[in-house]
Amino acid sequence: MPSAIAIKQVPGKPGKVYYPLEKIAIPTPSPKENEVVVSITAAALNHRDLFIRQHLYPGTTFAVPLLADGCGVVTCTGSSLSAQKWLHKRVVLNPGVGWKDHPEGPEDPKGYQIMGGTKYNPLGTLAEVVCIDASELEEAPGYLSDVEAAALPLTGLTAWRALVSKSGNAMPGRNILVTGIGGGVALMALLFGVKMGCNVYVTSGSEEKIKKAVQLGAKGGVNYKEEGWEKKLIAILPKDRKYLDAIIDGAGGDVVSKGTRLLKAGGVISIYGMTISPKMDFLMGAVLKNIDVKGSTMGSRKEFSDMVEFVSKHNLKPVVSRVAQGLDVPAIDGLFEDMKHAAQFGKLVVKIPLKQDNKL
Image (cartoon, rainbow, N blue to C red; front, side, top):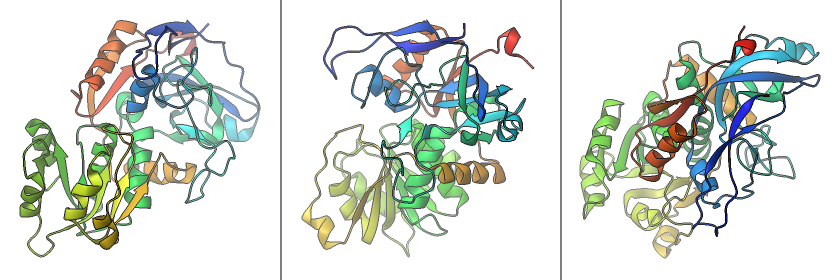
């Protein structure tokens, strides 16, 4: 039977518990008419996976393979032509289902069902195989390695919706601030913004991460741990545009109070996560400046397709921080430690060797 990594239940309250990883056996899949079996070659972590281990994510459950980011090779298909056309192709998986193309949100009454570690979707990419509907695949960009391709789906989709669909400012000459540079979504937002001609600025608590962001095309950055970092940011903005058009944020906390001082009237704060605080004040200053605060979570199947097409067209490469080899619990735990301490710059990826009987 194929293997996967899931979380093991132990006593503890949400936010206090840290569920251990365990290797489990999963059923050998038998694809239905329009399904394919993907032999996973690489899978990547996201912050939601850390939240799942802390029981801070909706629907956290056990015996469901973790992770939503994956790349692999289609090794078996159902009988339909739309499934069979994928045989032997290297693919990336759409990280969730239930959202086709509506700009506002998922059409499915059940909402958007993301893969990995919850009761809402039984699939996860930290597994040797995944059986999935053929409509949820995109061909992996040929110039990317398996590890780089696995780093793309969820972070690329989240960044695409936050910057392109929600901020309305993904265009040449606009000043965009991406907070917390170093995480996968923030880095993809940086890469997208630079390629679209935006002036992208970043914040981080690490000078080294700011320097790396500049090497990737950021116009500059400031250390949010320093007193008065907002003034330092304004000082490095273009002389003829001393304001931000949009902020792409994954932290929450005081982003509205800080952002109100930096944004133009009618500026946008596009928030895809709240890693600092699950609550956030909306202040009168933001009202008076007509600031829009927009929540942005994941994205539709159409946005996923648009994102992969853009990445392929412009030869963009997701940034990879570190790779663990195989479904090895201690090695994967090490990646989670990197995430817990915000030590990564880029994606944390698990490379999964193809079993001999799964190879083409």
